[in-house]
Amino acid sequence: MAIQISSVLLQSDEGGKLPESKKISGPSTAFARCMTSNPLLSQANTIGIIGGVSVFSTLIFLEKLVWWSSRDGEECVPFVVCSDPGMSREFPFCSSYPPVNGNHSQFLSNSEIAVENLRHKREFLERSGAGCIVMPCHVSHAWLVEVSEGCSVPFLDVGDCVARELNEAKMKPLEAGSDVRIGVLASDATLVAGFYQEKLQSQGFEVVLPDKATMEHTVVPAIEALNRKDMEGARNLLRIAIQILLVRAVNCVVLASDEFHGLLPRHDPLRKKCIDPMDALARDNHKKYVQK
Image (tube, rainbow, N blue to C red):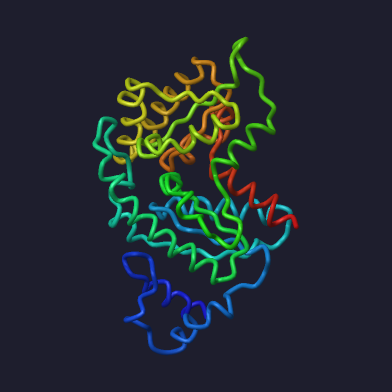
């Protein structure tokens, strides 16, 4: 069965849809045809996962989901993943880190293509029996509203998960007369989308973003250092970027970039001042769909 399922997934076209004209002969063809009436998984807590532009981000989330759902000795929650590594080639403007002063017209002009691709994956997961859908990719959330429209099952919003955890923390402003401030460190594409800013501001938080100098001299060089496999250099630059935001009286820093995952050691004091959105998304899944 695993081989049959994989053969169906690998035959998706560039738009993320199973092509009608290139059916696979054999048992997997019948499998693809009967998915609507006979889903892969029938458990109500099955989680459907739309893979990110980066396969790495998908693997990060799966690791977190497995850990949270099985940490009490229970079996891992059932899940179905639809991952398309070809997306990084189809949407190169979403992968890695674009220049701070780059032209984002390509990002905006390709929105329709990206939305169609992600919708096809969402529909596949719905037919597979998913009880909820998650999209563990920061950049893909720029199209969350369009992709989730008409979804027959709950579609979890990582921005809402982050805002909910920050609200539950009941933090107090560090400066009198101001709101609780939350810093956001992210790839430029995510900042342009304005996703985290909008979500957090709607919950009454004041969002603080790194200024141009910080982006040019710490954040971008940190990611460039990672690309050179200079982990220590990237780690030190990330620490500086976080400290710059903390000096601006932020209570917490949202690390909304896959590149920053695991960069800070577990016992690093600065790590306690940060929140990983993928952790928040995995925890929200655990609360809503695993503990039932």
